[in-house]
Length: 199
Image 1: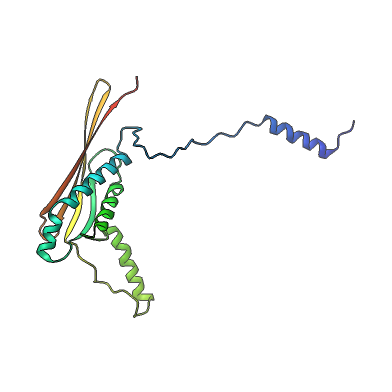
Image 2 (image 1 turned 180 degrees about the horizontal axis):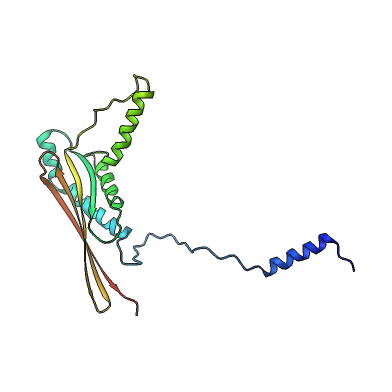
């Protein structure tokens, strides 16, 4: 029996499909709200615990009420970087952005942009000075000055023995008066993790 060219091509394609390896499967993804520790390094659970502890302490401390009573207005706070003194990469903004949101929601504190964010606003005003009409352009030199800075430290200490590692983190968040460098409030959260090596 004579096989036509189109039929032979079809047979070749069928044979190729039958012998081709199955495509590699992708990663398995499971969404979860559980607190998980995979490596023992700093993670989102640690950041959330720091944010929760700091927010509760910061908003219940007397510095806000004392300032408001003495000056007749809400204190203005600017967030500065939290210094990471550990060996691990830690994005402090994961918890400072939560603190910032809580301060604003409390309606007891005014929060101004960080220096990084303020640079964008200043660029925008400079652009408006060139391109926007006089009736709508925003002028430079009208920013709200901070009364306090929020900054802090992340410190770590390790203790190793017999295949075990005790890792302790101390996060210290501080409210510092801009005018005189006086620390008006210091909040701290300690986290300990016991990491056992696999046998």
